[in-house]
Length: 268
Image (cartoon, rainbow, N blue to C red; front, side, top):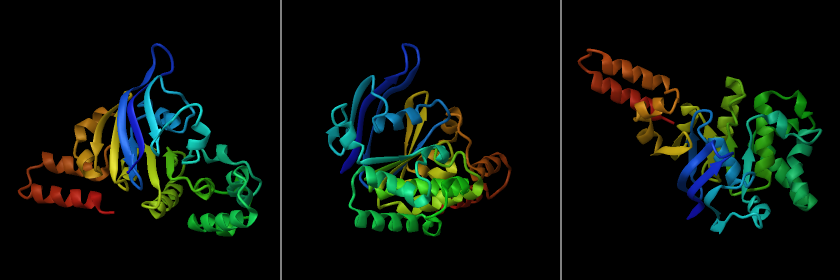
């Protein structure tokens, strides 16, 4: 069953600047798709269209079988949660507990149920011991984990991670990717990034360039298209760079070495 269907989507910020060009794809319920692209490729514009923050110039977006319109956007937003790039811009509460509770309070969730969901999702992101902490005093990774808990607590079917690790240090990136791994399969995930390492977790990878989808497939299928990735201004994985060096070498067993390197690349 498709939870998201996008048909011939186009968006222009003005008469000259076309951000998306006839984009079509679908996402199955429970699937994890990584949307790869450099800055300006259209991937973040796509995320804003999916949650109704922008209105398409043309084309159709269906969420759970319903066409997204101005009339039903508030209702359909309950199906999709989004975690943004900068965790500092997402906090509204004075404590971690207050912040996770914010969306639940807006939805008028009964108090007993709210407390259970706060505890459940704080534990899921390993922030249960920080409930009374001021979010301003947390590390970047901890802040982003709280932001994820706040989205998860509202129990949306789809979660969009819009460059959610791009402002974090390596430790913070690992913390957030660990959370994403834990929820994989239990939610439909769209992860928008320019980092191929993060895309290895996905079921499918979609590469965007100049507002168009230029590749779609499993990570293994897409990542073997090295020239396409480079043309899309994406930095290939270190293991892929080693594979290129082996290709250019005069080693007798380079095919075997390349195969082992590919296996190493996709080992999860």
